[in-house]
Length: 140
Image 1 (tube, rainbow, N blue to C red):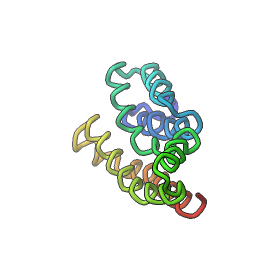
Image 2 (cartoon, helix red, strand yellow):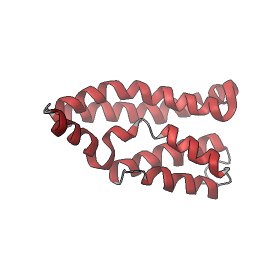
Image 3 (cartoon, rainbow, N blue to C red):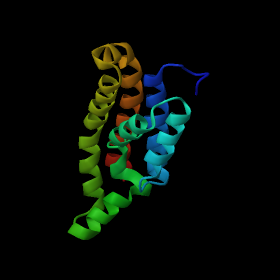
Image 4 (cartoon, rainbow, N blue to C red):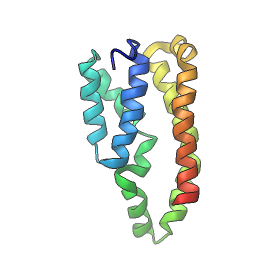
C-alpha cells in the first residue's frame, strides 16, 4: 500500500473503506474493523486513531455484512420480507456512504483534506454506493 500512495487519507480509503467493505461482506461480526485497523497501524497510523476511523467508516457496509445476515435476521424477527428490507436499506445507505467518507476525510485533515481528496472519495464512495443500490434493489 505504501508503494501505491504515501497519503494516509488515501490509505484509509483503500484499506479502511474498500478492503473493510469487502471483509464486511464476507466475514462481518467485527472482523473487518480489527483487521483493517491492524493493517493501518502497520502503515503508521496511531492504534486508537486507526480503530476509531475504521469503526466510523464501517457504518455503510455493515447492513449487508456477513453475506447479508443482518437483513435476513431483520426479516425473520419482524416477519417482513427480507428482500423489501434490503431494498429499503439499499436506498438509504448510498447517501450515507458518501457522507461518511467525506466525514472521515474531514476528521483526518479538516476541510483541506476534503478538498484534496474529493475525487477519490467520489470514485470510491460512488462506485460502492451504485453497486450497493443496484444489487440490493434488483438482485436481492
